[in-house]
Length: 253
Image (cartoon, rainbow, N blue to C red; front, top):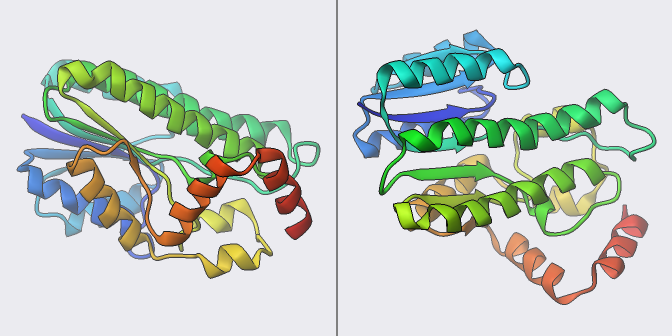
């Protein structure tokens, strides 16, 4: 049985990028798609829109129970996991001294630990031609004041994805880190108001980011970046010292 696994937050009405990501699995001629998230009503809405059979796995990726459920199901079905998309994550704006310990540790747990855990339990069921797509961020390219923990977690995702890609190359498994800039999703409802004209000016639609990510994953690229603005951002973080960039961000924001 060939399957795709997608873990994250789903709103097929407002978060069209996730709905589009799941629909893209249909090109892999999958027998089933497993979707993991907390809100069952959103999963059921997504399920109703799909042609491929969708298996709902309701659970919180911050809770160890969901991993036990997935691992048990993998052992029972012994599927061929053709694609794994780790899309879960959140960010909170604020200085380290201002945000609660709980908020900051949950960011680390969901953005880093959950992604690593899900990847680890799925790899044994992947084979040549399988894809792993990890949602990172353009924040991975450089530290960000008032987004210190979030940017650090996304740096982890980028670094983890690149090194994992090298480890799995001999098995023919490709890993792609998706590094978007500001995307018009519910992310900013959780992170808090940015008050940043630059982020507003570079905001893009989720469908465009996902389309590019799927093309890049299909082509076996290590990093997927949508748009000239974010490509320029990546180039700038390679050329300019991070100290200067941090000073500029601190003053500008």
